[in-house]
Amino acid sequence: MSPMRLLVTEVYSTNRLRGRILSGSIRVNDSIVLAPGGQQSTVMTIKGANGKSVKTAEVSDQDTELEFTYSLPARTGNLIASADARPEFSDQFAAEIVWQSDAELLPGRTYLLESVGGKSEATVSRLKYRLDGELQIAAKTLANKEAGVVNIALTNAILYDPVSVSPSTAQFTLADRETRALVASGSIRHGLRRASNVHWQALDVDKQSRASIKQQTPRIIWLTGLSGSGKSTIANMVEKKLLAAGKHSYLLDGDNVRHGLNKDLGFTDADRVENIRRVAETAKLMLDAGLIVITSFISPFRAERDMARTLFASHEFIEVYVNTSLDVCEQRDPKGLYRKARSGEIKNFTGLDSPYEAPENAELILDTVTMSVEEAADRIIDYLNSSA
Ligand code: ADP
Picture (cartoon, helix red, strand yellow):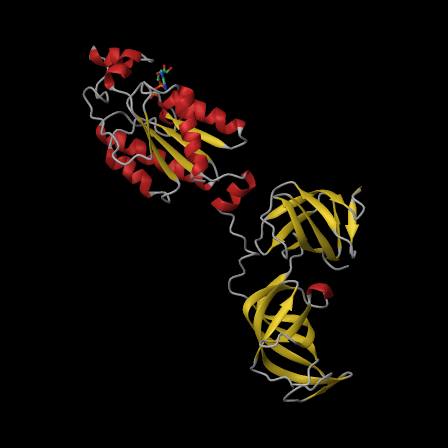
């Protein structure tokens, strides 16, 4: 039985499309792969030609509608294939062709190849022999209606199956480059060399692919400001809003970092630098996992914030200055820290006996005296949406 191949004819949404089953059959819960692209998903529902839900669908001249558990960046003309029996991908193969033009085959000349697995400029790099029934006859060219076995080299690799595996994805046509008239039809016997960039098979599971199943753009929202300026309060509100919008975020703050990863660090300048370095590296791993990461640290030194920025692409890093004056922060004193610092109980307190270097190029500046927590969070969400 041939492996399942479906040619995408229409994409309705990121996880729903219709297409023509070219070979094999498909069942609910089957693991499938998009080609090219290599993203995997699982079949959730199948609807036959009459729109009725079915458990399985087979080769048909009617389209089948599929719904997947994870979204796929599918486009019309892509193939959906069984994940455990993927089509091949190559720019060179051996094929049997039937010549269909009065102009003879010219090995070395460029033709246009078209198949369900792609389009490319193609040259017949070698005519191996002419076929006369079963007989293999040495030949330099093929005349109209003559069959032969050739090697074909492409400019761009295409997806295909050997004819012994799946005839529908092995077939191709050759056309004249100028007139576009059909000159030959053929079927691929086997690949001669796998393309060096077998990108669709060896799918890089990367930041983009992880983020795409979450339908979000990974970002770092780097909050900076004095103690009591409102970083944690705003960060919590941003997280709630992201969650409500179905976005997957993670908040890195003093509580979950200073008590674990960074519990060996104190508040000297050197330890503050190392604290921020570890936070930035952790945020980078989370960004790579596809998340929207919010960091809520005083991060008083410009050099450390700039170091953090260099770990990310420019659009990924959003520095947000929670600009609340020392006076206001001290009046709020939500954790009683200013009182302790003033009485000498805490040393190296930012704003008092340790410096805070205000950002010079923050993407956003939030004034928490004129802005409510809700407004401040909305400004961040708006920024994310407008620069997605
Ligand atoms: P930080 O994380 O920067 O140390 P917190 O968020 O823990 O600061 O504390 C900020 C305090 O200021 C909270 O008690 C919060 O309720 C209060 N606050 C008052 N107005 C605002 C505002 N507009 N934005 C953020 N916090 C505010």
